[in-house]
Image (spheres, helix red, strand yellow):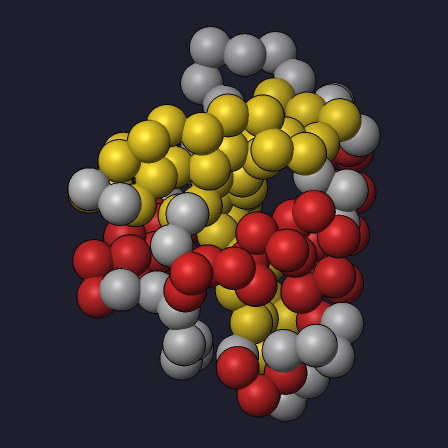
Length: 137
């Protein structure tokens, strides 16, 4: 699935997670769901945060550029949150970049009810901070 945001390194990491799930379907670290109405339109990857009792990480949520603004991301996020709730989760953490390329991503999280809970300056590289969002379910 193509996106217009992720770097080559980020795509490689996302593919590693997908392969981890496909290669070991009984593993408990990651859950991946795909929105597919005849063609893959988006997906998310979540997992329980290690050493916590009810916190989950939203590792990835992505949609094809052709469906941006059509509610697919909102649908995926709602499904992820419901799945997390059904597994006893009560807090979701999402991390992203501070660069302008991720402006829409950060706006998406805010619109979905996430709050910025932390920012680590120059985390990825000079001028590219880590922005952490959290949402209690």
